Image 1: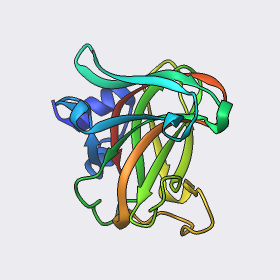
Image 2: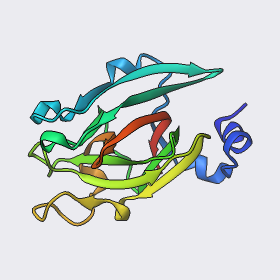
Image 3: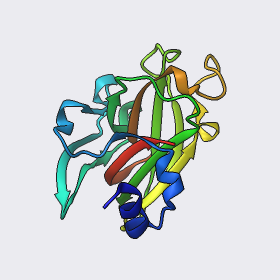
Length: 181
């Protein structure tokens, strides 16, 4: 069965949208070699967590869990992957298939212009206990500071991170697919 047919059956996604997508990862083959876990402890924070790569029937996914704490100027846990290839021309946003614990999470993008560790572009999304497709257009991403351009450019993207951020909470998010559209 083709990806478009599977996506329509599982998620109600029209096949013409699938054809225009560019997959970054579906966590099928050795995702631990591409994704790294980070917490705010790299800068003195006290958040903690982990990422595990699991299967749910036929589907593989990444599960990020942890405790986000704003104590000691902290407040995040994340998994991130570097982009080995340039993003195709015409790409307008990030696409995810996710589920989780009814909390808000974020995608962080780093570009050739985000040279300092605290620079990124951020867009938020909510998750529920059922798998759902999330589409975040680049225009929805906000720069972390005034030294960055307003909207990230697709041709300058270098990494994508899935982040629990900004407030004290328990994090649990499953990510089945990460891609562009």
